Image (tube, rainbow, N blue to C red; front, side):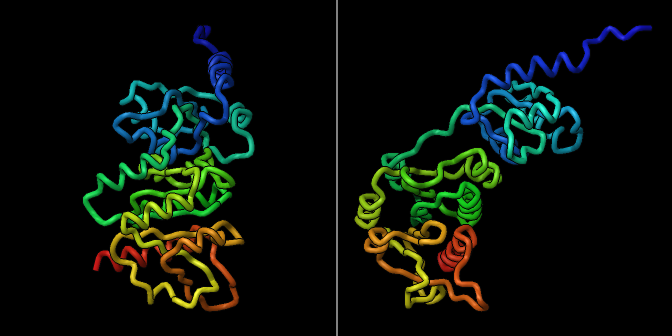
Length: 268
């Protein structure tokens, strides 16, 4: 008997047409990033496309989570997903989403006003690599940070790559982009938040610093560190003691070292 079911290629072409109408700005990729977006009570995910060659437990879990929001994941051939988002490791999963909310100074001050505990912030002074931003977001959430702050100009935003590397942290942890970082630093000081910058030229070691109480750790861009004006606003500048021949750490690694030491002191 002849099979009269629609051929898979026709189904994929229809889905590809829908997917091609999306810009890369509203797409996220990677199983963990999409799953994290689906785990929120109100998801920003609108559509999901999955590689038709993948059938495993992670895909099944993602499809189930999508159905809870009334979203039916659609199948595409892997090469069609590659055309939609070239040069990324999408793991056979791409989703179209509403953009994340753009948080600014007003949102930061509201967040601080609503806190029932001592503020704990991470400030990234001009980190431009989205991989590093995503890794810093993941580390900051794990360390208990309340928000990550960065300038709008000459710094990475939460791109699809940053979202994927953050492993879901960027969906949950506020990322606040400010127009004037120096002004925000002054406002934080007026709120009693201790600003601790990092520099290899400092004479105070991380483990000798008092990191309890209201705190913001400031890390600089890859290579150049924190800017001069930013350093001038710091209440204290510290360095990470190191052994061996390495002169510096990747910014996300440095963030982990500093934030978890601060967390250890705060939890004593």
